[in-house]
Length: 170
Image 1 (cartoon, rainbow, N blue to C red):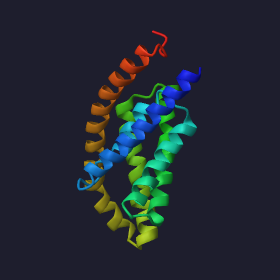
Image 2 (cartoon, one colour):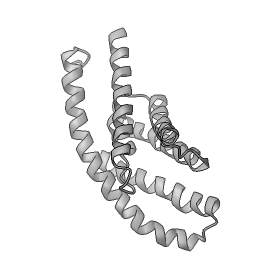
Image 3 (cartoon, rainbow, N blue to C red):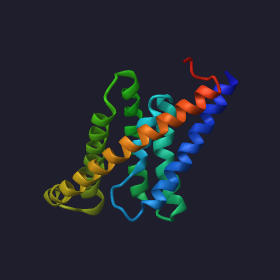
């Protein structure tokens, strides 16, 4: 049991580092966010508290590291934490990961773009809505590409590492 816990912790830590690195590399591409895609991969192996921490801390650490911490950080981190808890549904309710990727992107964009945008930046709702449509389309496409890529790569990684360590039952 101790080996399983330590392997879970290592996987969690490495995935956090991977996410921060990818966010840094993709910083100039708007709405290409690896957080939700990696959450979908982790959703199969971690509980909702660990997923909440992954979603929240990734946004928080990245904004602190890049000196962009502000009120927006809190709302974005909480929104990703909400989405992270929702990824637990992928495991418990057998929701398809691509469908959840689209749903989570829509939830994120509604909360951050249509609700928080007008509140924090005094936008008209119609302006926020019109501006959000192309933004969300780009966001969905980016998340689908990353989700497909990460799911395949990380599943192979998990399978290879965990099977070798005899943590998997197969």
